Length: 252
Image: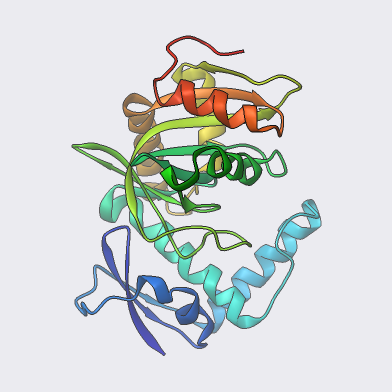
């Protein structure tokens, strides 16, 4: 089965064994048939994904546990894209929840279970039609001469929250739980370890080196924040006001 998709402004040809991945990517179908990248899935790719998911599940109960071959193929396709994109187009996969507000992108990341999706849901409640989900799990980030951009992808989390859009990335925020809502700007040295942990790290050494360089470039182009937050709507109000520039000082 073959399909053509436009993801992060790249034309991706996918040749699969199962239909699932094409249904998964239906919102990204394009008519162009001259691909920038050609992805062909083999039985070995599915075996790799199954072994990897089983190993991750053994470490963390929250990790993906097995699934059908069609579901494993969805993972295999995205992994092959993530391996190729850093060198191909200065783009890398990042684990986080990305939301657009008034046309600008804001990306929230944290360890699993901290509440990234819950926090962006509060933004949607707070801002209404002014906010739109970009991707709730695995957005792509591209670095260009015009700055950083965050893209929606079909791989947008278990609730399938996302859009086929691109927006300039204005802020990247590391979340942690707290009784009070407090946000502040942070320096590159304070953010980089978490950003490296949350970025997809390719197995190819050249692609990995390029990803690290792109992350470094990202920290030079995008404002970095740390937010301690609870799950009240005030958390979204405090974060949006400060990150969007409405408030110029650390908020508590």
